[in-house]
Amino acid sequence: MRLLRVIVFLLVAALLALTGYAYFGDMSADPRPTRVPVRLDLGTAPPAPPAPAAPVEAPLDPAAEADAPGDPDALD
Image (tube, rainbow, N blue to C red; front, side, top):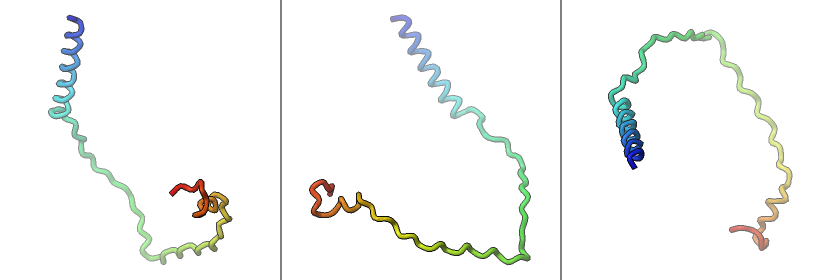
């Protein structure tokens, strides 16, 4: 019974320590300047969009025909 009290006390102390660290710990990131080069092509025309592909007809799906209204196994 005494060992159980020690374990419970240590768990409560660990939770309180974790909560205190979360609220009062210094977890802010140090600010650093970041430079990223950007290439601007202002003198050229924008590229043409790709041509749309021809539509492809979907093959008949036998499972879609099974959902006919007269099908007793169809789920509503």
